[in-house]
Image (cartoon, rainbow, N blue to C red; front, top):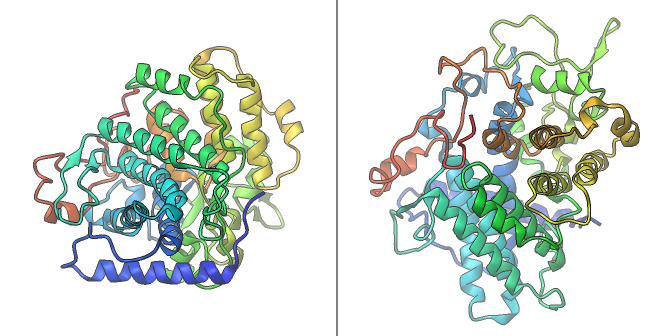
Length: 487
């Protein structure tokens, strides 16, 4: 059962996170790697809220558009640059700061404080797991990143670590976190833990599922390492519920994307992308009515998308994303949309792919795991009719052949992540090439068939970090990261 936290507690956390972020951002002379004073009881929810904030706003926007769930509304203009694939280093300063200064910094302080305080050992275990999660988000977006020296308060220009080594360290953090967990501990956090309310068994499942994601991300570039790592997970427990932060309509405790839209005066910048709406419609998927609002007139009542980047040329009517994913700017219910760190659906789809590849031994077959992933997605949004969908929809039929099975799994993962795990969906497209029907934006400034393949290093690193020019240097948005090798 998901943990429901008191609104007053989360409101306080959100206010402090916001204040802390502003303080760190405005003081340009402050070392961004310098840990602040605090206590694990406060720092854990602060760090979780900070991760949720970047997942639910910055990365939700990039992933939502580049993952071809949304496109720029022709009647507004905020994200035309994203549709043009025209982004600059300054576009990512906030994302970088939130990941490092607001999340990773506080997680490191928890570990420092817990080193000599046994009562905080379970906080430290969670912090290792969340540190692994946050570093994976950072490296999947940017590639090579500061790691070993990143959180050392005495180093203002941390060296960059190659992405392959970052991935090895992520696994090490997860192993450390799991080894520290005591499911019987009386010192586990309660409401301080926004994801699981201090249920340490769920944190083991979360860490195992994250391990599976990390190893599968290397499926095309380091298959032997991925296979060996996943083989060791045979018999492990994986998530069977959504790991998410819940929000409310209370000011300061609203879904981060909705808060972003409020800051823009409720302007509806997102329109439904034809890429996803056509797939949902062609496959008779009832989740379309959860992810998008119907365009309704006396003559028409349907889910309608427009081509990616068509804001200059389209004359068509269109649907908009729904409140369920926090992307309907004029509906206050968007404030209550959760931010999913890892969903149960993703967990099952990861297991299904690992079984198909022959790397994971499981009591369930790949077909069963595939169908459970779909079922979990339906259940998460309380959509009826999953049995009918599994029986009749072409997209729910598990095909023969390894590559076709992987394609089917990734397509259903993409659907399940509509509007809520956009960054992860875009990342999986980069890894696998699926969906294989993405279209280049009509507004592209890159030419040819180039599409975004990474986030750009922020201006703050380019101008301040004296180690930046040595490694890795400036990148273009179409240059792939280390594990992105599939044609």
